Image 1 (cartoon, one colour):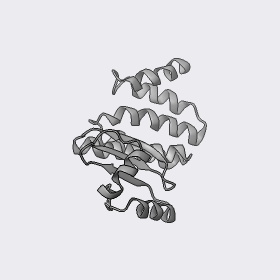
Image 2 (cartoon, rainbow over the protein chains, first blue to last red):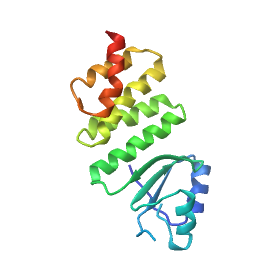
Image 3 (cartoon, each protein chain N blue to C red):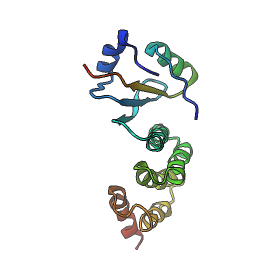
Image 4 (cartoon, one colour):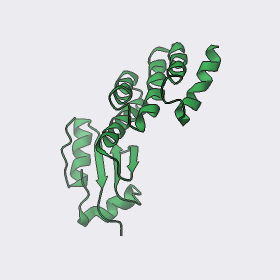
Length: 32
Length: 132
């Protein structure tokens, strides 16, 4: 299972809609 | 996909991510299907991702695909915390796909041999009683 990490959230969501793929959203920065 | 500082706060609020690390599995419409909060070792992390893919398929009533993901977790990540939950959902997905309640009683029997002291064994125990 390959995961292609991206940084543009909206672009990734749009691509997910177009390609009918799931998205992993990673919040790994320090909390504020 | 990793959040960017510029839009990180907006995305964090949108998805209500209050702790790090938080990993969300979203369906193609951007709807959250599974949430992982806190660090996990690699095998447990992969098991949670596959468990989430199973739940995503299940919520969209793709029973056969859901069963495949759940069964993969149960078979290949058997030492992970996700394995007991996956075993439970394998039975449910098989039942939903076929309407055959024996898949539920078989699951109850399976819990007599693995993961006996888990909440998932308790949940499945009712199916064993029904079959008796």
